Image 1: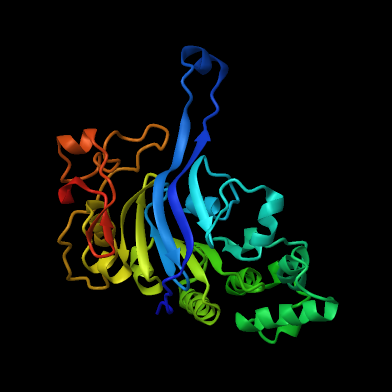
Image 2: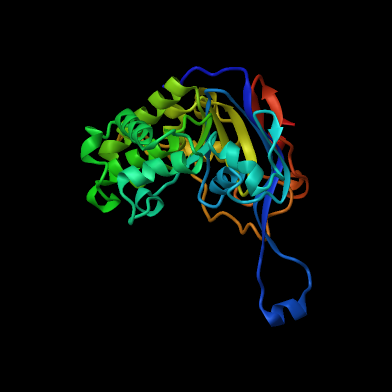
Length: 334
């Protein structure tokens, strides 16, 4: 299903971190002056190539959404570097970022929350065009909006221009959100679980729609999901995150069919199998993801890992290439 992947790098991330300072009460501050931080993203590095769909998978709280927001500079990174089309955008001001916004877009998880209920569909899709002054006049703007709506199969577009979000179904709202993201022809898009709020019956339609748009535009997508089975079908590569760290990364077929990290193996084992007689061959991990304020020492997964040993509790494993384009952060392979 994924499109053609070019060798050209659109995005390069080096040792990226995003820590949120934790506010504490007056008496807590008196007892301890040590600064506490929520380590949402804590030192990840990877690249995204032109036309590639890279899925970030993992449990809730693993840092996937924060990673997407930092890459788009919706929030500032604490440290590390983000190179977009060869340019370091890590410390650019909002004024300097504005021209790049045309190339970088996002599709949020909940279309009802991400669309302004006071704006018509035309105004919603036209907003990026107006902000970037991408049309010569009102007639050209309306044509761009109609084309964007037609591309996402909101047809005929004339019937939807002056409707409001509440007059549309969930699937139609998400199509409008996708149209808004693609209307300026961006080269990089973050899709934050764009189908998780939709009915199962229309999820495949939206996913196929996005893949078709990627093929037409050669855009690159970071697709954020907790469903690793879905990631296999929509992405070229998968990066598995856990507690702000990258645990494993490789081709989507390789990651799902031959997972190496115990955490990835557990995620695969947790995928429901449509066969009542099938038996699981692996144990599904138990317990909750630890606090990102006080992450475990050493390997962050060792508190839930069935193979953990003394080295895992003391030494953090590096993300190493164990085979071509297959990276794993686990002491079992070093």
